[in-house]
Length: 223
Image 1 (cartoon, rainbow, N blue to C red):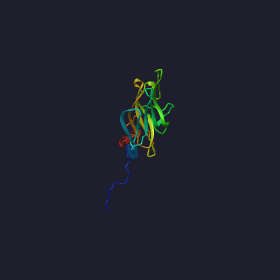
Image 2: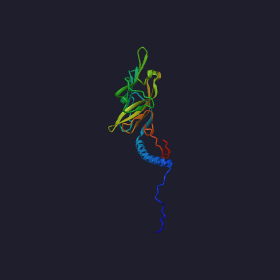
Image 3: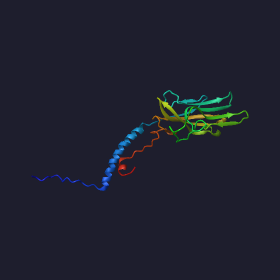
Image 4: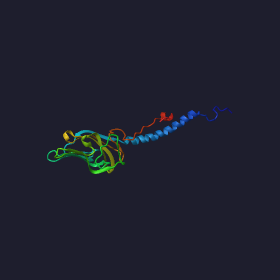
């Protein structure tokens, strides 16, 4: 009988370092599969932003966030009296309102979502009144005691096909010559139902903030 040329069937012993790296690589491969699934879900999240620069006329304007022909938010600029006795700015819709002073003037970076308190139907944003004694008074969060506001946001909740979506509208409010001037400078909404949106965020995959790790970095024990 000829002697066998096959090497003996003895298992090779890997160094602890190599064995650890291989195990980490296997874990990394599995994590990458989960990460790709998460990335697919995140990629579906999309903020639709509409830039504009619209000075609100008497009567105001309406906002259709997803351009489906349904008015989701109305901004009403109403001039009182035959002459100039005052001007009001109101919002009609479902807006963020955490106080008793009408519509909140949110700053950039505010998270609009299910945990917020929403007002319904109508709410005062800003108002200026000129009285018979020539005294001028202001009210509303957006009036800011006559100083006005710049780049503030109305947080909005509305429905698309019966599902809740969140959005924001950005405005500047000023009082030149004691008259109220409001400019709509843009608006946006999150396409994923019930997903929160960050005021001022105009692009990217919502507010998820997912950053995948590479296989190489995971294999080296890094994140």
